[in-house]
Length: 529
Image (cartoon, rainbow, N blue to C red; front, side, top):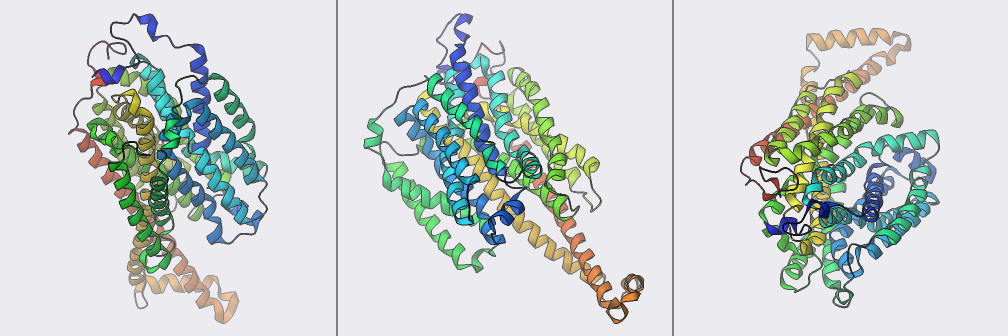
């Protein structure tokens, strides 16, 4: 249990819990850097049409503005622990913040889609380095007694940023232009870079790690994670293994994975130390983080798609509707912090997972008329539940690891959330397509020629288009088909929400099988850990 509280000497007086102001400001700068990096995953999602028009891109090309960022980020996140140990948190985080800022400027000044994709990949790769550093710093520099304050803060930022991304992006592109999706990073990015360089003093570099850098391992990891992200992102659009590209990248992914795991398990100083998974709490925490990624990114995707395709909302209207979840998370964060000091984390997680399951179960009754008020309760439940889950999962996964493992482990932990999001989106898209096709087939049978209700509907619609003469019946048929397609899509949304309910309901049961982590000692509240 000593590993959980290495930062606090045994028998130390309460005064040792005081954190120097310099470190608090340094940590806040890092948190803001992480917020920008995670926000930029989703900030373009509601404004892709504007970027597409501005750069004269095709619909296939524009998807890469999102995909390039995600692929590059997912490679950097596990690598960041090694680089942070080699260069020190101060140097590595400052380079990441400065590089992210420069890449943001280059994205804003892109004149073609190829330029944009290149700069987005660089922005994602460099920006990804800022995310795990915050988790590692939180559990390195703050004693256990401060966890109820620090853990909700990083949990809030990690979940709030992707949730409000479409809102912020929609507002910026609506009020100014798509260039401001990237220019908005410049001044905060400069401030974070300066603050990181002048204030961070948590650790010393180990330059010998650079001499032993595993380039083969890096290539294998890039092939494995990059190909996996590509297959998951593009699989649905390219009809999975019907596409030669998907088959090729799946082969690259498998070969990369074999080489990566062999290097990671046989080298003395691997790029990514997988032995952190021997810690049972970390392994369980990473599993929960993976499923949280499904819920977090899956619903941040599902709601805008429904509002755009079924309700016909623009980016700003979608953002305004989605803002409810962000507000619920913001208001729940301090409550989650308080509860984490008093409640068994397993009970907190069960309440959180249960609330999430209830929210998606309510949403499974969705119809084509659902609007802000119908989506209000499911979104509030989602926002509150995310925070109630995130805080104990963070403490569970990282709170009991020794300090020397924290940098590496926080990279793996954040990677699981991003991979959960990628897997979740791929499954959700595939499920949406398959269930829509199924419901269309059933609806076509229900409105087939010869059925009385179908004939009556068709006759009344034809009557509406009577002024168009001979074209009236074909126009009525087209409208009937459109309605059937729309209804089938809405029914598919309901099926996906029901599927998410099953996943999160299962997590409630899985929480029961966990051992109570030492960090949640029953007595003494904060300082007694």
